[in-house]
Length: 469
Image (cartoon, rainbow, N blue to C red; front, top):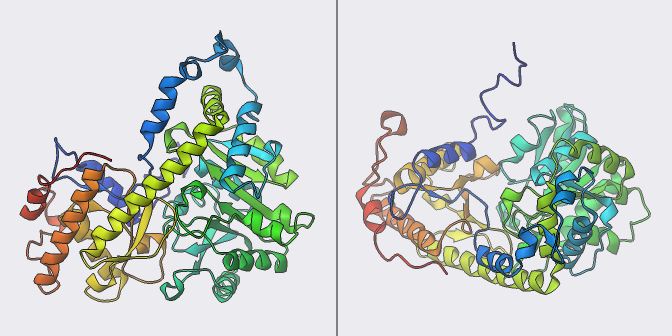
């Protein structure tokens, strides 16, 4: 009666612990009043730190939300607008905003922007444009767990991880890139491109010039290879080194007039930098006319609404506001990140040094019962069900080394983050004091669906609540 894909119960996520953690959180979500012992969501890379700044702008600019320009209603114009290439005013402002984030070292032509319903759609469209079903993309691992769904589910594209090591901070090396390419060839996979997130999700680090040069040189040597650079966290870089886009790295090598330039594509979104994931605004930037033409046609299946484009064009046109917002937002992200890092360090947990993003990459190898991914999942379950924190295990990110976890910090109040740190410290103290086994260990999940957490979780849930910011 229905197609095979329509009959799938999953959403392309298979049995990933990343998605399983979300499901468990949704059954028992933390609330400081209604459910103080519930699971705190630390698996969501969402920026909720600067809503007040945008809300203040909206309050001071009622015409923008009332669909007026110079006191005149433009409701009719927006309601009837159907050009799926997008509102010119919005594309102009978005291109300027992207350029400013990159210090205007890269200038973006609005005519080479394709608007999409978020970066998820942008990445999938590029997969459709570049690769046939069964062909492959190389991705530096660890990588965002959602890519296993976003890039593969409908396109049929395969992912081959580039295995990066903690020995050099999980940086991309020439040898790791070549090894992944050779591994794909042994699997009889045709590699059509490399997709990177810069800054990295889940590492929270921006790419170095050496890494970008390795990728560009790889594309020069392999004439069918494209580079897709997902740069949705580019405006979150809060510390040295400054953000370096793949476009700037290619320009510094004077590649604008070469074929390689037409095989470099950038994905951007306002979900992270402006904290507006619900607005579903993404974009593809490319100098390849064939990709632009195909992507524009595909974007018609998931458009950004005209009223959303109008509102955002007004916000982005206020340069004084956007510059102030970006500065303050970065400061808040940095403070919140330092709060988590110092709190985890008090529990004996170190994090990879980071300068961007909305998460930390935490090293919990010393808490594993043994150096295996089975032990990592065992620890993850204890933290999820026993501590009441939904964090993402490294295995979900295809990390080659067990014991690393992604922990998000910008999607919650300061009080919730403080509580998370207290819960983690109590767990580690209890775990270490029990000789590596928590004295308050609960029954396995399959034996109990009760949501009663250990008593120490209940106790720390009610103490030392702090107001947000």
